[in-house]
Image (spheres, rainbow, N blue to C red):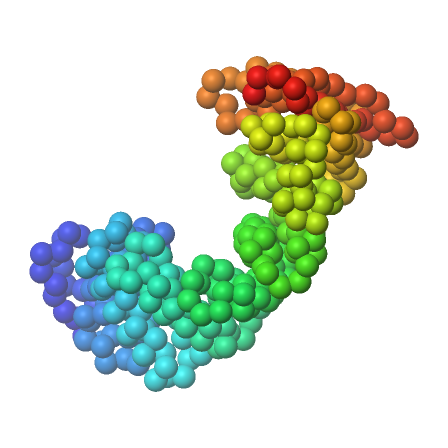
Length: 370
């Protein structure tokens, strides 16, 4: 059977379904072309009459529309209709694998920031899609992807019991991270670990220290997965997060609460304006140690109250002493040690036995201008 579609950007031609099918194969990776040929396919008589071809064509059509919409509300609404038609078609044919895939695509669309409507309601609908997709997925790939999306939705959820949402998010993200590890998908696993860090920081169940240690563990594992392919920005962001977590560990170790940590700084006669300075020095020194050390579990941090000053010390197994450098104007990093040297009263490093070094800085009170 042949049909004719007028006024096509690809030219007016008489097309069989075989011609359209080959055009769809060639269009993969080009959203506008996918939307064009997917739209032609869903109107083709052979496709509309086929319980197998109809949902498959709608899946292609929906993907193309979603990826080429660029925030256009009308195109996004058409994409939703295409995905819903795909789900309905696969539901009728009891094709659970393809239904799970279609639900995943619909969930991504509804959960995107671009999709119009009430964000809370959109997120709930997205979560429902991903939960159903997880129930239907039989292979590890499908379960890993669906578990990640369920965890991501729950971590963003603002309705219901927030503590329960975080607990459920952790369960699903732990599952996703484990499956991604089995599948040897390091970039996906790093994403799941990064979300787990956020969840453990938000967690209210369990002790503060246990949640912090879990966050540090996940962040360290994510940093280990960063390489040249994941990009400098990803590596730098993860390093800074880990540095911030180690800074929090100091507060948790020195006192039972954030208020107790502030008392320690005040007891050392550090003015209120110097508290942030001290935390910044701690963060920069720890981040620098983590960045240049392949045995991060050996990085140790101490904050010592000397009465009229604080001494910050960071131990690491790297024997190379830090050297502040002047970074290029457009560089995204490289200024941390210069900053420490500028705001600390004193700054230096010494050898540490049996291996490594200790980098230290002092923060004075008194009349020092902050």
